[in-house]
Image (cartoon, rainbow, N blue to C red; front, side, top):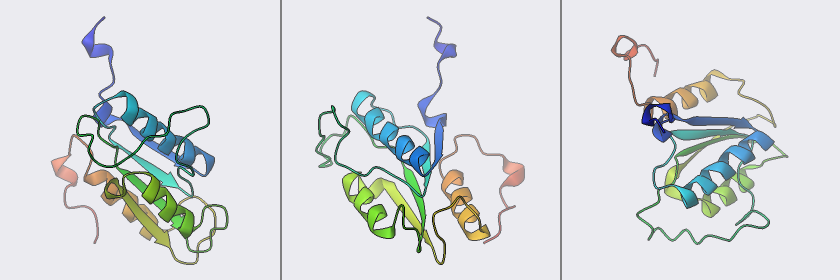
Length: 145
């Protein structure tokens, strides 16, 4: 097989909303079990893992002792008024996954929905800017703080 035909894990980013966010984060968890290189990152809007393990899968103890396999960085964005994936559920997700690899952003006044504000988009862009492999120097100073 030709090595150049493979995707480089650090350059793969997942993005999901609601059930798609749950799927993206589950994939990150399963990826950790099977590979020793994390993906580039996952952005989960209004969703994330909801239980210790998937039905039919072996539960994994994430005690931080496993240096060989690394977690993928995850950004969770939820709304303060989201009744489908609440702030409390986001906190549970963080405790199930490796909390040091999860960044959570709670958008005040928002219900269950896709990114809809400049503040949320800025959070996504900052998350990506710290994890993208190749930077474009011409765009370095274009983001507003």
